[in-house]
Image (cartoon, rainbow, N blue to C red):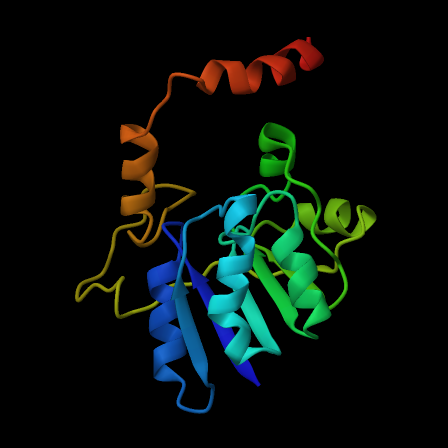
Length: 185
């Protein structure tokens, strides 16, 4: 079975792509794709990957999918399996961007924060805890590192993603969160 990796400008993509390349026993196809595809481009993305289906389709934070769930439905119809690894809050895009829950048939979700597992499973997901790790090709040190804090951020694969957040259009950011703030009040 093929493994299709939706590579976008989100966390850990470089490390996952590197790990897949090291596995000679897995036929993996890396598809560079925007973090969110528009509803209009679902068919073209599907046509681009159709020759590799059925497949295991791997994504990080649901990157590469449309918010309406159409690509997820097409993958289910092709008997493909969807595997998503949420390294952020798995409910963030649903709250802030009204992302619909994807089809749960043939889908497995991992989360890097164990506390999300019960809530996701209660919402109908098939969620499991998968902690973050490091790839020594990208994060290594020749000398001992002094322990200074209780928390550490490892790696730098998200630099491009963070740059897009900082340089992107922020004009409508307050409008996006205003309904949430009103609801919380």
